[in-house]
Image (cartoon, rainbow, N blue to C red):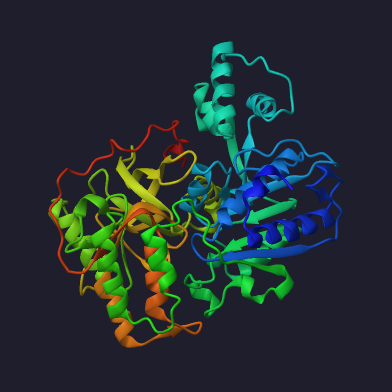
Length: 507
């Protein structure tokens, strides 16, 4: 067991040993750092489940480092490298860009499931740089690139294992070195999937087709996917393949947000008792705020979390109204949520381009401004490794008490978007923000209805998911009021990114 494992609690240590045994059966021995070639026909699926703060991410990160030390190659969504018969690989996946970016911020090279399904095709000349950076080739000589540019690429890659980022540091654009995208045909090897509570059965089957060895990490207290009829994919696994973590492991063990999340497990806890707990926590710790209104400044990058769709629509329109946004256009800095891609089959390549760049259903996006062609928008995809993209857009702004949404402008077809200043708690799963505002009147409405999901009151599941989206501070909003903005909308807070692929110039 690695030195990292010395800090494990008993339940983590047991999970580590059980997973090591599964990997040993697949030909990867972590104890002796020995690898044997992948054998066809073997299939193993295991899940690590636990509530927020139980140490799932710590365990995932430790296993990733152990596999890397053993000689397993890490496969990302941006470059895969040459195939070798003796090569063993690991891919670390999440259902959304935001969930993958949370792992990347913690040093784990995660990508989205879509980026593994759709892989880039590199220009042969620039693929030599990718091979060199990945340790599979000699330092190349590329016409038009100086030694200084290659040094910049290497320095970037040593800090962040991103081939596109390294090539951008060398002065290249995505359209220079990526010639297209293709659907994966060949299976991979070992797959780790975070936020597995968001998966449905079809997605799990697709992953099992790709990864003969699959390890899921999920939270059983979250809301089940809409298509799952109340269950989560890891609940169907036999008991020996389901490893449960129970102890809280986060360094800030006195975290009041986690204390509130775990208090919801008490079957005797009523909604009014829970709100008193929040009020008391707010009185002694600034990480919990008993808020009398929604702070509009936070909504531009961190949506208000609600249960009811009507509440979401009202808050979005209030947000636009206080910012003086005209009905005929969007302001740069307005947040959006991708609601899918509306393209006919003959435009399959464009769909692959958009999805591979992060524009998948549920992706959080910030509007940067109009594109060069009518109906196109310049967008920043939150959490994507190469976040800036220009795409044909259909933007819908729903109105209170109106059946049809208002469409300020639209292309004939392309990526569709809803406004993202407020989102439902279901759609917030897999994401985290520094500050999270939870609209309490909606949680109360769910409590009054008395609905249950998987044997637990729905309001408790909603509250649990909502408050555990907060990385640093929870704002429990108790009144239907909205503040005035202290600063205008803008995009200065978004870091500079490599030049986007020229999607808007394609016919």
